[in-house]
Length: 546
Image 1 (cartoon, rainbow, N blue to C red):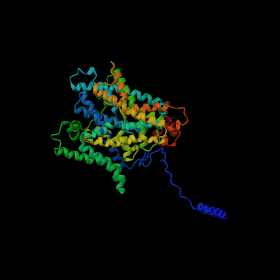
Image 2: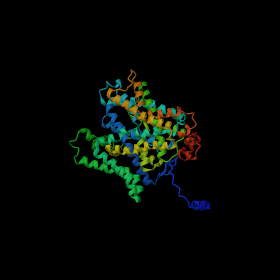
Image 3: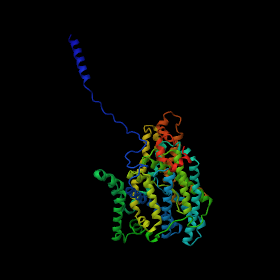
Image 4: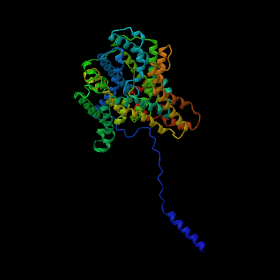
């Protein structure tokens, strides 16, 4: 009986315990995968009010000035040009960049992408500068003109690569095989691969570069959370506020004589009056086609420049993908990317016709600015293009802003390049990071993307030429151009491995995230593609995207 009583009691107690709800432990869940980046204030098709849009466009103009000044300042003196020629080339580069940006945002990908100068074209340009056929020219100005014409001819020839691959649709076939796994190293190295233009350039004048870096981080990341009521204003204009403050500080140091007895190199990087651009720039000047004379053509130089054009094409593909992500658009359809590449080829053609001494590509720093401001509006970037054209014509006014010391802009790049690199890493949300295949492709491609160019750069700095040193200079330059690009090496390795390694394995498709982009491989598959990427004036009827 006692045993039966015990059982009944136990049964009753069990029933009572079952009636009490048991608190379930909360299980941590991974973050939700998102096709579009959230928390963006203005996306591509939602422009901010006009006053904000103008100031935001001016910020984009300031950001792209760095590359527009750095490249001509480095190349033109080697060509034989002085401050007058540097100022004219900068004006021309800005003018053509404004036109190319308007063309790209109106008829290309239609993304808010600034199209500006590219570091990829520097190596073949230097090769033209060092060509033996110019060594006998003693007059610096005549040598500058002859080298410029040779560079123009090479750029005109090189534009055919992007025009043909883009408008023929061939590049569309390549991009169709791109998955989130192979896109991650490609886009990440578009930003992280420019690390040498970040803090190493800041350290050239640490007393103005470091304050700019710290102030921009505080204004853009900390102040908006501390001042909730003014969060919108500070987030939007942190860059122009911080640059204005530190630029004024640099001006005070310059006027106060802080660099009066400093070494010439320090003065060049720190002073606000050392660029020589303000005095050399004309008040009004409109760049025009073939202003330097008739372009000349050399087969070897043209081939090397074509290789650079192809590398720039790969880099711009990563740039376009980064811009689409940071502007809160959907993944760019392959046909739209191919169309954008074709229009970028038109941009390189204009570079050759006008004589900018450099080719065009997607501006990485301006892509990062989309993330810093959280504004991905197409109208803002088009306004910045108008600023480029205006200040290129009104040379004196543009030269004032071009005199901003380089370390200030380099400090800005530290944040902007980081944002673009992080945009590339964000595509890993679509991949299975617990897969050893994913780990291998990701790790190996990124490592080789950093290691191989480092070897080429170190070898060149010691030996004076690249590791490939044959009698054909154009071939040597072509190999160096290919393997000195972090983006090209990392993207090529990831693309090859992702499309060949265990491709027929059933789980591979999901591990690489390929299925997440299925609906974006055709323009018509997702209705949002029509919203973001359709051509204006109903031009899709005549130039359909597929």
